[in-house]
Length: 255
Picture 1 (cartoon, helix red, strand yellow):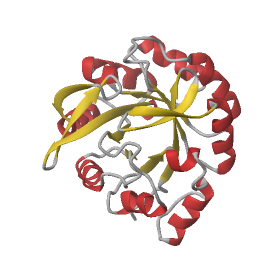
Picture 2: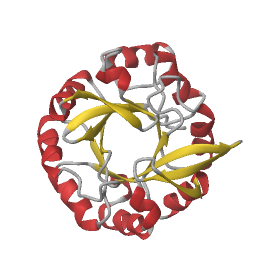
Picture 3: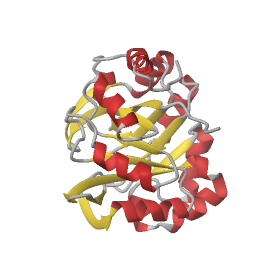
């Protein structure tokens, strides 16, 4: 018997200067609220997880804001995944000790791939998410960008994701820069390709604008989880509305 896992709905809190922000194509950021208050709200709403990204930590070459993580972790009772500027075993340990259940590693996964291998051995694959910011360069080919989408590595994203799976990553957070903040729907082709070629869960990110978009990426795109920001931060939909819609459309979710 094949065990079908419930699909996850994950609000994403992009944090800059201690506030939650939302941009378009990784630029033009607008304030969206206080991270602790939003985290509490999503916890009460029934989110399956929270993704917390300190979006300028890598670019500004500084440590992630651990005190905010600690405050958020005290207020929520769902898994908290934290990313941004994570480049050492010590920082990973500090974040897990502060209450994060998972860490999301992007720029350092590219510049120091051995960190993924070492971290997954030390803390377990379930705690290590590799976050890839990708842009389409040609048909069925996406390259990885680092430092908050500012720098093109020219690395093929799918080949790199397979390497990360071998190194012990537990999940891939797949961020489409082309779709980020556009509300035009997820990159279905991208998520489908990764979901079919990898054996670890794919979290789709970038482009959620309407209920159908989430259904499409979880069914046609075959993603294991859908991450969204704008539709939740600006109260277009509640998580309950999203989950009820998905359930009515035969997508298994936890209500």
